[in-house]
Image (cartoon, rainbow, N blue to C red):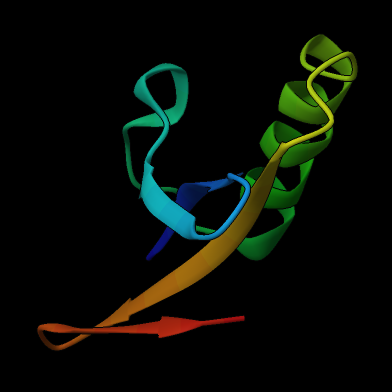
Length: 64
């Protein structure tokens, strides 16, 4: 299972949280990549926000 985390960069720190519009699990890497591309297009004017794909593994979240 994959999830999307929103990465917000501020002047002196970075925050990660689940994007509300993408707050669900994706079964395949292809599905989650397509969703990230769509989110990036919708939010292209937001230069301080990006998206990170993470993979859930038995209670541990691993970044990709």
